[in-house]
Image 1 (cartoon, helix red, strand yellow):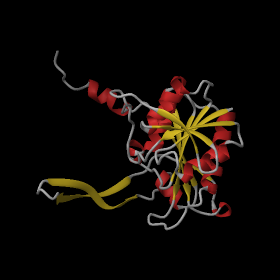
Image 2 (cartoon, one colour):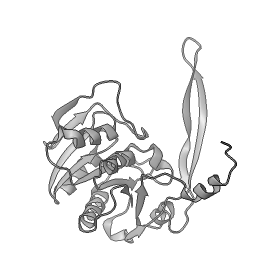
Image 3 (tube, one colour):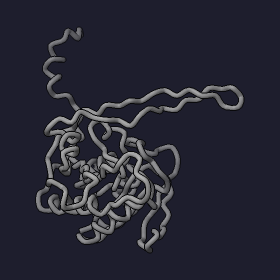
Length: 256
């Protein structure tokens, strides 16, 4: 089994190494990750400049490849031949905050897994719901183990090529997790605010600020089940067509 591990926090992020170490229990692991942080980068494809990949060693001596592109670029390059071996799984993470609801459209963690699905590779995104203002190093061991269990399930139960799994793990000890819950996307509530400032020459610039997002804790959703102590497993499909609208749109008077 050959697993590609990537992320959006950068190749030196501790969550990436924890995930890669856990995946090594299943087979060969190749790390291809961005050389800097791409959080909230969304699904990016770099087409107007060359991409560079450098072989490096992580803090414990683990071999990795650092790419100056986006997380989705890392997966595309691996699939296109930067890695000579066939890829069996793409696993992205571990993101230090949950990716819930509409977050999946922003998240570099999730969209790296989306890129894997586009290439027909079974793909998983793993995030942990760590406290927003946690101080000190995070413990990624439980989330890494949950990611491994999901890949084991995928190996035994193949899914369609246009589907990926988005995994969100409570930041709890292993013995306090209530189990796995198969969920749908919940309603994320964003509280963004526009912050306008001026540079030393009096020219305006802007930050998108505001408080951290919340969500509606509805049963059966990723937000609700995660808050209840379950590992949320949300299948996400690449087909974004609003199929319920197709027949309705056909009834409109479109003219000739």
